[in-house]
Length: 245
Ligand code: GDP
Ligand code: MG
Image (cartoon, rainbow, N blue to C red):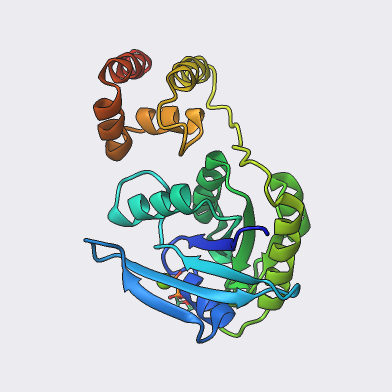
């Protein structure tokens, strides 16, 4: 028997995540808090077309996955711990460029992503037209248009998510590799190699992702790395100082 499927909903604050979550899960949900903090935890269940029941987690709203806020720290801990089969990334279609920043961070983490371009009613009102097929092709992901407030597009979103899960089930996460240019790339490669060799946090995160977080001065990753492997941490920080100079 295969283990229970998990879908996580991610997105910037006010992108319509909770509206979509409520509509998808109906009354099959419960709300609590993550232990010791005030960030709300919402989970529910939905039934797929196949009849299979899926657990759905409404992640806290975040602009990135760097630990700048409690929400961001929680969101990525949940992703690393629960390893969802798919993340539905809910975007405000009217602010695509800002919203796609989180998408890229999710892809760098390696989690399979389905994009829900939400608030398409607002985008249309502003005279915007978005080439969904082109975006899907460029990102290599399913991209669906939704209006969570009315429920428009949600059945199609769920069907596309189900189909995507079916093609990826059991496959390892495959982190997207983005070039950060000639100054950073060689440093990233060296850091990545060291992190891989030492197995530093690699049970949870891709090595390149750990390297990027160190370059971003992510306090949670830095603290953990320093505690687990002080000598490796020193070498990685030396790389950061060097490239900063
Ligand atoms: P969250 O912070 O991502 O969980 O966002 P919410 O689900 O709380 O939604 C934020 C606001 O946007 C609420 O007032 C929703 O009613 C509204 N909203 C959600 N989806 C849509 C949509 O597709 N179109 C429009 N016009 N408003 C929406
Ligand atoms: Mg919400």
